[in-house]
Amino acid sequence: MAKDDRGNPPLLNPVLELRKDPLPQRAQGGGVGKKDIVHERLQAQRDALASAVEAIAADSRPVVAHGGRLHLVARMFADSYAPSKTPTGLVDDRFDCRLVAPVRGGYLIEAATAKLRFWANYLRTAVSIEAMVAISRVAEIRGIM
Image: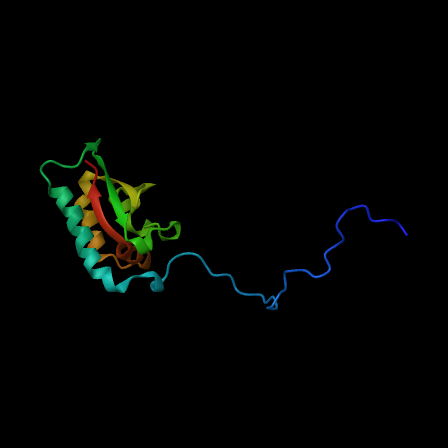
């Protein structure tokens, strides 16, 4: 019989012991659902976010705008700042606004100054689940000075 030159003998008593039989489980689907809406603060956030956008639109010395567009920051609640909770439902192409990049504690939004009032109305009245999830998870919207 050949001599084993590997040094250490093979492990006879493994440390890892499987205690649960592997069962096929259905993968959780991505996306947001009604369960992701924070109902306790949805109405308050609708009013707060819409009012903030209306105030920015009505301000006589607006936030710095370039070419009819301005940058806003949507700050997230602490329990909502995660990549899976990106507030894509907050912005809409109909109002010429989009998410640009993550920033500390929230997301940078680029919006058209001419459509801010329409966007504020959307924040107050949106009925899609994705929009309600986003609205209930954003703490504030403010302009960048």
